[in-house]
Image (cartoon, rainbow, N blue to C red):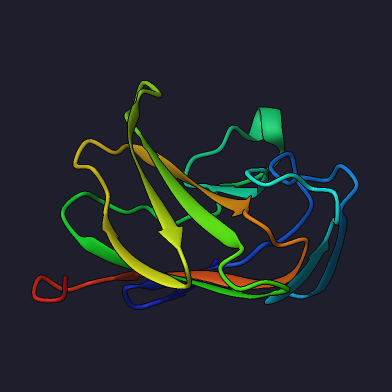
Length: 150
C-alpha cells in the first residue's frame, strides 16, 4: 500500500491465503503489474482479497488496507487492463467488531464513490471475476473526499 495525503494505493503484493490459485497463472511483473490468467475460472469467483484487519497466525499476511471511517465519503478507482471491458467487480464488505456484516458496496466499472457504514470496525475488498480470464492488475486507489465533494 502506498500512501499520499488522503489517498491510498493498494497493490496485489503476493500469493497468499486470500488469492485464487486453482489453475491460475499469476505473474508478478512489478509492484503495479500483476498478470492473471485462468481460462476456466467461473464468474463470481473471488480472485483476491485485501483486508484492513488480518489474523497473522492463521493467514501469514499483514493488513493491506487503510483504516477508514463512516464520517467521510471515499472515491475508489480500479486500475486494470482486462481482455473484456467491465469484466471485474470490486466488492467492499464492511463488518462490526464482532464480525456481523454492516453492509456491502460493489464497484462496477472503473470508478465510484461510497461511504462506509458508521459502525464499521474493519472491512475487506474482493476482486471478483465477471468475465475476465486474462488481465493485468495495477492497483486500487482509495481517496478520501472532502465535505463538499460527494
